[in-house]
View 1 (cartoon, rainbow, N blue to C red):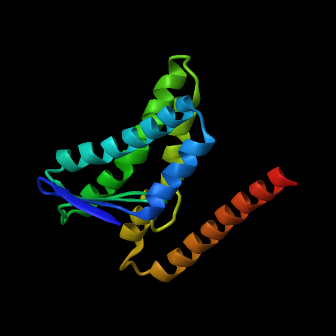
View 2 (view 1 turned 45 degrees about the vertical axis):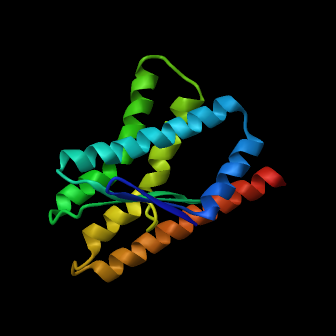
Length: 169
């Protein structure tokens, strides 16, 4: 892992991030790579804008094979935390909708849709899972909510495995 600090923000780049990028660069053309990283940039800029709008600052950014994780100065208001978490996927979905309404198409448009939906899934390491955790932690129905989320996770993983197996058979 590589670590460095710029101004007041600490950056960590994990080896899984470097491996993931190697695979992307070896298996895709320049147009796809540009669109992919463009959609990722739109997503992260959504989070950064929300952090700034809520009066916070980005403390750290960690790059790994499953994505980019930012930590900002904490806010005591749950609504602000949810706003920051949902701003990344929202930016992707807004870009997709805008391009679709303007009659545009292409990889960048579809990658924004995929990025937005992917990050809303209820897994702890994604924005959707973090929002779900904020909403259910400490509630009287926390146990049942966690079980329902687990069912959704199993359904999502099963669907992905089914699609992958179907494509290889």
